[in-house]
Image (cartoon, rainbow over all chains, first blue to last red; front, side, top):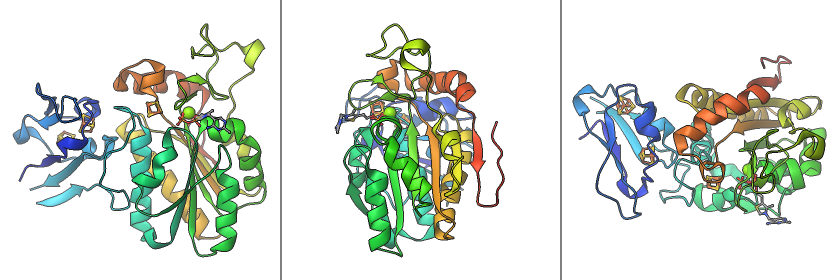
Length: 68
Length: 251
Ligand SMILES: Cc1ncc(C[n+]2csc(CCOP(=O)(O)OP(=O)(O)O)c2C)c(N)n1
Ligand code: SF4
Ligand code: SF4
Ligand code: SF4
Ligand SMILES: [Mg+2]
């Protein structure tokens, strides 16, 4: 299981999680989701520190965070 | 793996209609987390406003009533008196609370009504297309102030937290911002304190949340958060303006 789990259907592509991630490990996908937005995804799981900031800042409750 | 951040249980699993990056969604999560922490979902009753948050009743997984524009504090007062053990909160925008509902909020505070008010100040009427609100900053361009709000014409923006903090019945009054991880963490603490104030029987509580409206401000979500920090916080200082213990930490 990934450290950061995105509920892609709820993502509106606002990029708030990308901006506030202290490790800059989230990116916006090139493809679009069912709503027509570019969804966020964890591009570099190895460098994610499971800090939870992306989860707390996502306005759309689309992120849950786990720590190994 | 240990869960570090979970979506609050007091939120419905569905997506919201809010625009991408709108901080109404962050405020919803903080209120829902507080209800979860306190374990009061069974007795929580929210009152939704007229404004972008009108559908809050579909997003929170607790009882809800929707009120006429600005009248949420009056409806919450009725609920408070009929259901004494309910945990009652309103969720209101700045057009709703500071303009058409100015009388209701002042008198609910004057009565020391045991309710918690979540006040979303995004400096515009969001839902109706970005018209000037009482909270719009001097010089801020809106659809009804295309050259920027003029002091001599529209007066100065209303500082609700400071004003209500002069009222003895207002036991807890704070202003927070939803514009960064640190500010969101402080906002969470303030909302928890507002609910604690209600549960302890101390009286009325209100948390003013500086919030973004990327759509009507004409900005990308991050740009809107930066604009808020640079322009709104200097005029609307963050902090606690009145606490049940009698202290203040604003400025
Ligand atoms: C009695 C009444 N007057 C006016 C309106 C139109 N109206 C709908 S929402 C709104 C303002 C909402 O702004 P705000 O409270 O700031 O909420 P936001 O959408 O910014 O979150 C107005 C004036 C209405 N619905 N009812
Ligand atoms: S948990 Fe922290 S480090 Fe990991 S993606 Fe989210 S914000 Fe970045
Ligand atoms: S903050 Fe949430 S809605 Fe915005 S891009 Fe990230 S996952 Fe998507
Ligand atoms: S109009 Fe503004 S306040 Fe309303 S949902 Fe969109 S961004 Fe949020
Ligand atoms: Mg508003």
